Image 1: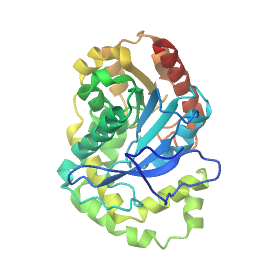
Image 2: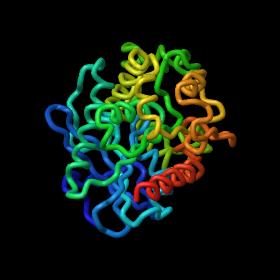
Image 3: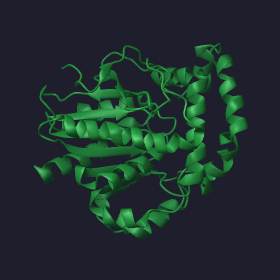
Length: 325
C-alpha cells in the first residue's frame, strides 16, 4: 500500500532493517514549522483504517528508536484495518530532507504540541469515515499526548501513557541530576561536539552500548553526530524542566475513562510523581488500565524491551477495539 497523500516518501532512515513493515515518510507542516519525520504502518487489509494508533516519542524525539515496539504491535494483527503513525519531534531527526527553521528555544515544547495537533487533525480529516484514534505517548510524549486529549477530547478514544513524565520533571532524580546540561551554554558546548562524534568509530560506540541492538546504536550515532538535533533535544528538555510542573488533575479526572498507564518498578524520570497521580486516578481504578511493571523494564524500554511492553499495549488495544465495535 502506498503512503496516504498527506505524507511524502523519505528514502533515508537510521534504523532501516530487513523485515520491518514501517514506511519512512515526512509530513510538511503549515507556516514556519518545517517538516517532521513520520513512520507509517498501513492496514493489513490495504483498506482505509477504522482504527489508528498515533504515537508520540519521548526526548530525544526519534521514532526510529521505537520501530521494534510499534512493529511488534503491528505484528499482533489485532485488526485488519488498524494503521499506525509515529511522528518524530520537529528538529530532532537529522534525516528529514526539508530542514525545519530554527525556532526560539523557549518555543520548543509548544512547537511539538502544535506539530502533533496538526498531523493528528490531518489524519482525522483525511478519511471519509473517521478512524478511532488511540494516542500512545512515551515519557514526555505522554505529557504531549495529554495536551492533544485536552484539545480534541471527542476525537480520541483512548490515550496510553508509557513511563509518563507528566508533572514536576525537574524535581525527579534525573531531572535534578541532568538539569545543568540543558542550559544554553551547556547545550551549545554539547552540540558543538557533534563534529567529533562523526569521527567516533561505530565499533567504539557499540562497545559503550554493548547491550543495545545494532540498529539502535546506529540511531544514537546519527543523533549525536547532528548538532542541530542535539540543540533541539536539549532546548526542549530545558522547557520541560521549566514548564511541566503541577499535575493537571482536572484533565486526569475528566478523562479518566480514556487513560491507560504503564509504570516501571523504578523510574528516576518519574520519582514520587507516580503516587501523586494515583491519588487522582485512584489506586483501584480499573487495575487492568494501570500496569506496574515488575520485571525491571527501564524507562527507555524501546531499546531492548519492546516486546514486553508491546504485549501489554496490544491487550489494551484489543480491549478497546472490541468494546467500541
